[in-house]
Image 1 (tube, rainbow, N blue to C red):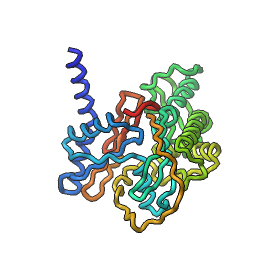
Image 2 (image 1 turned 90 degrees about the horizontal axis):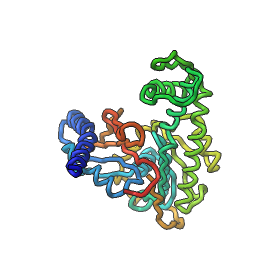
Image 3 (image 1 turned 120 degrees about the vertical axis):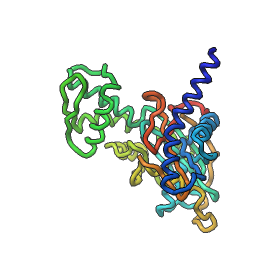
Image 4 (image 1 turned 45 degrees about the horizontal axis):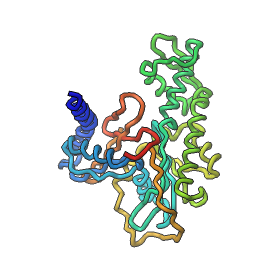
Length: 326
């Protein structure tokens, strides 16, 4: 009976993940007027064989062809090339992806494409940690007591307030069963600073895991839905000595870059001779992207709320933090 229950739970999880992808496929076919034949799925660099196999099963369950799995930092690097960023063959770069959590990856551009040298992830170094800290501050301001907030009851209001405070000095936040409270930029700063410091340390550690120095990098590029938070870029610059570059429209970069994987003519690219460190993977851990008939699906799996968080037409899977590749 326990085996049957486990099997049912596995099938249910597959269906939960496949359902939004199935809807994306239907929309893609409506847009291009033909069945989807090229599927690119963006996954974290830290995902091992078990999770990648599961992702392929999800695509099959959704009725799609065998997908090509593209590592998120590789997709970002390909996008940078497509926009004219100079990354000679043999050069290194770091991609700092900050969403609900953070993943920092160091890559080397080879003749055949980008190679991941090291990748580290931290589930507590992203927007989810900021949300929880801000929720505690808001509930404390409303009741005079810190902590103890019911996250599910205030999650929506907190996320809206966080996004508004990026461009406004103060906003009024409605709270369930409590009087509304005014959130200000000082509250956001206090919530962000420790998270920004964790991202900065993670960047340092990823570069060290690749057996490089920050000075060896062609650049540090920041992407992800939470990368616009205040103090993040400054913290990375302070810890590494290099000012990071926040890529325009950072939440869409990986999805767009997946379409460009394999599209660069390596016979005409600039090359630079540099010593190559041993490959060392320090494993851890709403918009559809279309390219011709290609369907690009980016997914998000977080340790917070329900395990799987879906976004209409654009979903991204992320690992649950540091640990062995699986």
